[in-house]
Length: 399
Ligand SMILES: Cc1cc2nc3c(=O)[nH]c(=O)nc-3n(C[C@H](O)[C@H](O)[C@H](O)COP(=O)(O)OP(=O)(O)OC[C@H]3O[C@@H](n4cnc5c(N)ncnc54)[C@H](O)[C@@H]3O)c2cc1C
Image 1 (cartoon, rainbow, N blue to C red):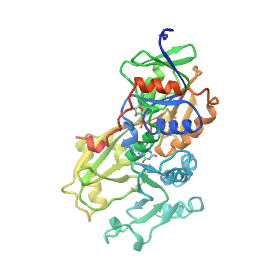
Image 2 (cartoon, protein in one colour):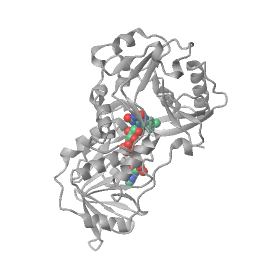
Image 3 (cartoon, rainbow, N blue to C red):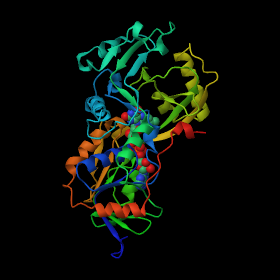
Image 4 (cartoon, protein in one colour):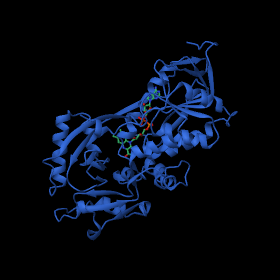
């Protein structure tokens, strides 16, 4: 369908479609580079994968579990440093209002695994992984019942809601909640969006950075490529009273961590342990009750010195949205490419929170130089659309 020539039109250099970390990060990068850019989200900011994530900004060491460095671990190695610069206000986006939950991350095994010990000590990982001696163990592992090995990584963990709030505040006035009834149009090789109020958004470039929503967006502009894959997870949320905030992967026999724990302050004052890793991948094939039983058994086996009898367990089903890979494997890098057949659409998936700066870096050279200043366009948008709310934490909304 073609937009009528009588429709009021708002011209932008760039319209970003999405409301998670990908869209928010990109908006700040583009505005700093002088583009007239606006973000359009169909829901609360951060809703979807971003607030459901475990907040780890990692250098890819967990992908070395196979015993070799993979493409993923090489592409990602610089990311913690990149984020650290932003947290200090010296990077390409300003994250000074973002809370760091932990400035390190642990990896542990329940026994001393010879192959891993020698690999972690190898030259390739020097400076990225450090063995933790008995005297330096965090309180959770100070118990004599623990007989495994513990490593400390240079990775960190962010409080994701504060990250979303930080970027939303930095870019207030440029972020809009789509009104109901908005539609997409394709005119030859150009895409256009018509808001529910009838106004047409005419963007030099649309960037689809809407996570799982990218698939429907691509269909709406009749694009066959790129294709998307969804990898399902069922995370486990454990509210308990053990006083140990902990952030780490438990190493198992597989290439992905057996269990990944991140800790978050619960609104009711209890500690929330949010559990992912292989447990959550397997959990996607289990019922809630089966996963809770499995999770309880895992915690009992891994932490026999802790008490979970009064813990409350719930689950969170969520899909990771990524560009399609052969065999549905995890992509190694962020994706950002022009959509074939369209002159003004780029599709992007960061594939990991960690790799979002890398995704933005890939987009910048694909763009034409900033156009005329369209500040009147922003003013018109502000009169028509409201800013979106911030998404609630999933474990505060899980029944
Ligand atoms: C359980 C889990 C744990 C994870 N843990 C980590 C981790 O610790 N470290 C890490 O690096 N990565 C992690 N990830 C991956 C990371 O969360 C994602 O790669 C990242 O959040 C994706 O961000 P995004 O903005 O592309 O998508 P999303 O966060 O899913 O956001 C998509 C947004 O687009 C909006 N939208 C959808 N459709 C439309 C539309 N048609 N129009 C307008 N807006 C639309 C939605 O409302 C939403 O706000 C994890 C993922 C999951 C699921």
